[in-house]
Image 1 (cartoon, chains in turn purple, blue):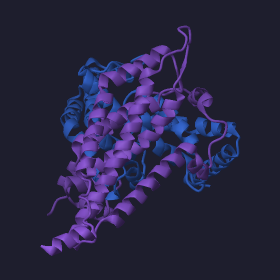
Image 2 (cartoon, rainbow over the protein chains, first blue to last red):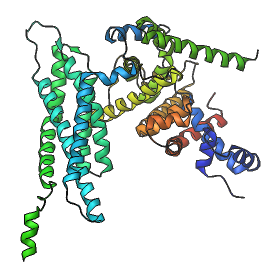
Image 3 (tube, one colour):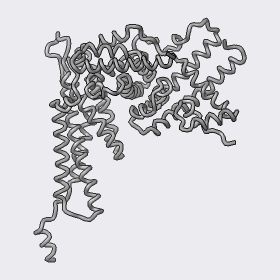
Image 4 (cartoon, rainbow over the protein chains, first blue to last red):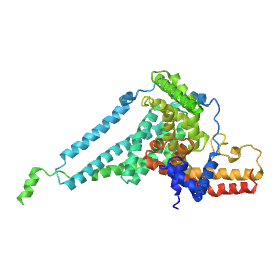
Length: 263
Length: 218
């Protein structure tokens, strides 16, 4: 008799098996698989005894109390999200990049199919390099501003970092996208730095809009300890060099072609 | 009316009432969102606690999930289930939090001291008070420690998939949505998680079963 694989038994136990009837029939007939299933169930049953603390009957009210002061008067309708000035600016940037890529594609000389593929790859990389470079530049500026934040008055109890926080939220979304792209493209070095940057952006994005001087100092120390500003600068520099390297050779104009034909 | 029918009706009534609360919130009635927060906080906390493994992070995940839910409420399709939607937001944020924790822990290279009152992860405090015998207490403590370690050793995706499937009963499509993977990849992740847990815990569970057979376990 052919026995069930561990994978099939686990899938059956967790309710994700495709042929449940087949597994059930087999289990009814095969003691060895039944014992195996009991062993899996024993482990899962033990895990089920791990308790979850009861947060208390009025937990929902406590959560509301915590978040209510941080909620805007009214949530945005879905279409309003696209009309926020910062999103419009980001969308404008992306449109500009697409147009730039299109123009670069149009002015590139007509070549054979193999060269065409290589050119498309180059254009794509150039667009990505420019976009990531801009993103790193924006992140660097935000982190520098945050690092230089300080209370105006020593007696001041809270410092407003809501502007940096909002920018970090926006940058966080872009950062995820670029990190995933870098990973897909096999650029581990860039992906690592973007990953580290994401941690910092996450910290800033999830900080309260107004922080105490001590909290601000803690955030600044974290930024400093991670050396993220330095890493961002180094990677940005590398990207600029890469951008230079991927610039297309000047297109041959007609007079150059005529000169060559004379030879 | 059967109990199952009653349960289906009650779930439907909650979903309809959630939809009304969402519409009222979008119309500017901020207190309507309070109803949603109070209704779903406990279940989101349970998910968050099981994913993060500690109370402090779980509470942060709950607050952040409802904050993000409010900010994105305009993007919420009214025909969807608010509970499922906020669950997904919480699961995504819990993954971010776990990653962040892992990095912080790796940097410190010392065992993490629990936040808050530090009671949640102390195995001594997790033992049910059922007048345990010394043997039972020792075995329970050891098993709990092993279970917590085995869960902590899973990758974020594996832990998420296991918690959502095994404990929260979420559908594979929903898990795949959170993991940003295909359904078959999500299924594989559930399998890998159970397999790893099994291999880590089987010896301890069997010891417990043997002890029970020998009469040292009540």
